[in-house]
Amino acid sequence: MRVLGLDIGEKTIGVAVSDPMGWTAQGIKTIRRTGIKNDIKEIIDIVKEYNVEKIVAGLPKNMNGTLGPMSEKIMNFCEKLKNKSGLEIIYQDERLTTVAAERMLIGADVSRKKRKEVIDTVAATYILQGYLDRIGK
Image (cartoon, rainbow, N blue to C red; front, side, top):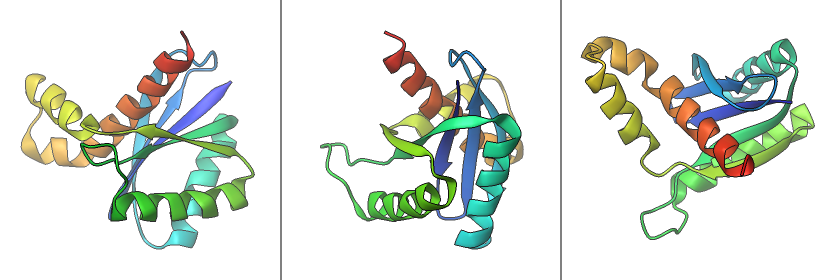
């Protein structure tokens, strides 16, 4: 069963997909946001291309575990995506995933310009892998 991972931001959406067995996550692209209809259509196209059965969306919680304004925006977006796709959407705590992605890219000596292009995709991979590891136990 393939699972799609999303790191939803205000300007971009990082996208990752699991292998067919649901063991590992791989980043596939960063979507430049152009409007909710276009954003959802692009995600649904990816869902169809990869035969995705479930979506995992990163939910940015405050360090104390509460939800903030960005969490509300993401949940609203995901509700619309769920209505259009018909797929279950699971929220995965994404605290510090972007920080971890940034550190990994710096450690790999990726240039600042290139990091900016791929950071959301890498963060989506961390979000999805965290979910896959959690359910695999």
